Amino acid sequence: MADIEVFSVRNMPQIQPGDPLADLICSALNHGGLKLLDSDVVVVTQKVVSKAEGRLAKLSEIIPSPFALTVASELDKDPRMVEVALREAKRIVRMDKGVLITETHQGFVCANSGVDKSNVEPDQVTLLPLDPDASARRIRERIKQLTGVNVAVVISDTWGRPWRNGLVNFAIGCSGIAPIKNYVGKKDQYGYVLNVTEIAMVDEIAAIAELAMGKLSDIPAVIVRGCEYDPADVGIKELLRAAESDLFR
Amino acid sequence: MADIEVFSVRNMPQIQPGDPLADLICSALNHGGLKLLDSDVVVVTQKVVSKAEGRLAKLSEIIPSPFALTVASELDKDPRMVEVALREAKRIVRMDKGVLITETHQGFVCANSGVDKSNVEPDQVTLLPLDPDASARRIRERIKQLTGVNVAVVISDTWGRPWRNGLVNFAIGCSGIAPIKNYVGKKDQYGYVLNVTEIAMVDEIAAIAELAMGKLSDIPAVIVRGCEYDPADVGIKELLRAAESDLFR
Image (cartoon, rainbow over all chains, first blue to last red):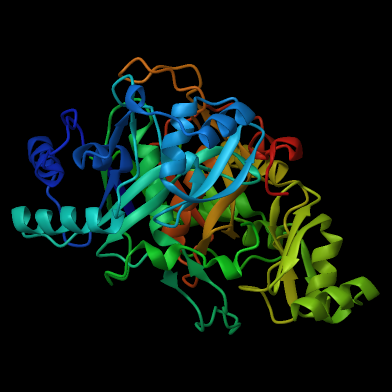
C-alpha cells in the first residue's frame, strides 16, 4: 500500500466571487465518490481562493502612478500590472533583468507580489488573499461542518526561486497543520544530534499538489493522504524568515 | 484511485562504499512485494548515493587552510567542515550570520557546498556526488537490467532557501526525466498564453519523496507513481539558472 496518496478534486465549476469554496470542494468529492478522512490535507490553489474572495483587479481600471510607469519601462512590463504589484507590496527586493521581486504586505517574497493573469478572464488579474491563513481556516472549519472530518488545509501558489529555473508550488497559507516539522534536538541513527533539521512540510505538500494539478487541466484542489503532521494551527508566519536572519533581502 | 502514489523503500541495509545501490533497492522492493512499473520515478537520497560512491571525508584527516580558519572563525563553524566545503566550491555566494552559501563545482547554490554530517559515522561527512546525473543514470540503467522496467531516477538532497524557514528536498541529479515540464506557449482555458510557466518537476518529485522518507526513519529511496513526465535524458543542468539571469548571486 502506498505511504502517501494524492487525489485530484475533479469537476469543480469555474469559481466566481462569493462562491462557497469548501462546499463546492465537498460536493465535487461526493460526486467523485471520494470520502475525506481525518488527517487528510486539502490543498487549494491561490487562484480559486482569490477568485472566491473577490481578490481580483481589472487592468482597464488601473491608473499607473509615475513610479509604476518608470518601473514598467525599466523592466519592459505592463505598467498596470506593475501598479497592482506595487500596491500589494511593502518593499521591492530586486528589480532587474525584466523581473520584479517584492515583499508583499503578507510578508511573502515573490515575483510581482503574486499578482497573476493566468487562468482568469481577460483584463483581470488575481491578487493574493489578504490573510491566506484565515482563508485556509474558513475552508477547514466549513469542511468540518459539512463532513465531520478533521482535515488540514494548505493554500498553494506557483513561484520561481533564485538559482534554479522553473517554478514550484509553495504554501502561502495553512490551517490545522504546523508549517514546519521539527527534528531539532533529535538524534539520527548514529547518535548525531540533528541541530538544524526543520522541514518546511507545507511547502513539500504544496509541491505534491502541483504535480497532481497540472497547470492547464483546471484542478483547483487536491487531497494529500498519509502525511504525518503536527495539527497545531500556528499559521504560515512560522515559515517566513525574519529579515534579520535573511541573507538575500 | 489515487492520481499519485508514493511508496517508501523499506529495509535497506546501511550503505557502504562500493555497494551496488540499484541492486539493493530492487532486492528491498522484491522483499517488500512491490513491483516497479514503467514510468515510476525512483527517488534516491544524496546521502546513500554519496556513501555508495565513496564520496566521504574524514574530518580528523582534514587540515584547514588559513582562509578556512578565518571563515570558520567569522561564522563560528568547525574549520575542518569549512575546509571541505571550500574544496567543493567554486564561489562563495554569501557568508554571514553563521551561514556559508557557496556555488559548488557542479553548479548548485546551497549551504556548505552540500557537505553534511548527519546520518553518517561520527567523524565522517558526505560530499555531493561528483556527477549526480551520471549517478542517476547508472541506477536507472541497472534497474532496467535487473527488472526490465523503464523508470526515471531522481537524486534528492535537503536544502534551505532564502526568505523561508525550514528545509525542503531539491533534485540534484536525474536521468530518464526532463527536470522541467514546459507549459510555455500553451493556452489556459481562457485563451491566455502561459508565457513563463515552466514547472521544476524534479524538485516537486524530490519534495514528495522527503515527506515519505522522514529524516530519522532510514528510508533512502521512494517510488513515486503517477507523474506525467517527459523522459528526455537532459540532466539537471537545465534546472540551474545561468548567473547572467540570476538576481541573487
